[in-house]
Length: 124
Image 1 (cartoon, rainbow, N blue to C red):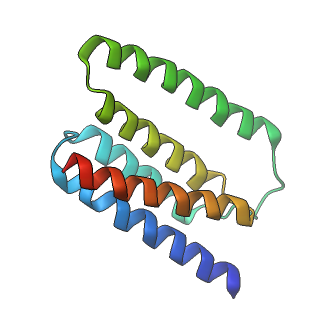
Image 2: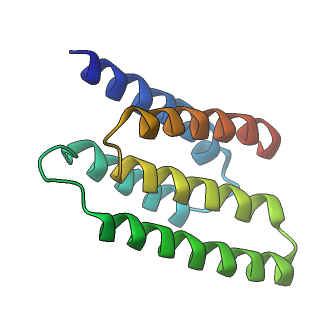
């Protein structure tokens, strides 16, 4: 019962933080659509259905590092640091949504949702 509440609160906070960003119109349609799809797919995925796999965590870490390098390079080129930082925060949130298993993952989701909410106040 407690885990269901934690999942519901975490997903609710992520949605509440993401909606102002998506509705601001600052990110076009591709980033909000991609995050919405990741959000929906991760909600249906049961993280406790299979044992933890370290290679999945390594894959997500490698993906985030490549994305960080790419977004920094893109920021150097066009100067839109805040927009690319928000995109990276959304990628980190999607990573946590897919890897949620323990309480620390939900705590990280809650922290990321507050960061997204603060940044959405700046970006809007």
